[in-house]
Image (tube, rainbow, N blue to C red):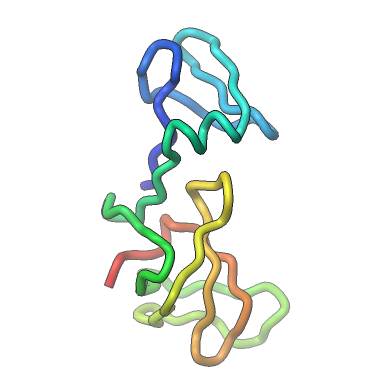
Length: 111
């Protein structure tokens, strides 16, 4: 499961996103996406492996694709992923049959 950035004020990891702000549930500190990027938002796959732009990932569950009649089957390889700016839960990529995918990282594992 993807992890949220640690709170810059108290250093704890119990944070969540609310609109354009990150909020610490422990101390109540709120900060913007620029500060989260400076704190180092880390994108992780379903196994906790760190993902970086250009990685290859594999779909771990059959997924329905909005706007397409072709589902993404388990085991589909997504090559050369791109990270979504300020979002640790989504990546962008292309499969062989479907282009322009935005996928949640909880349904992916690093190849």
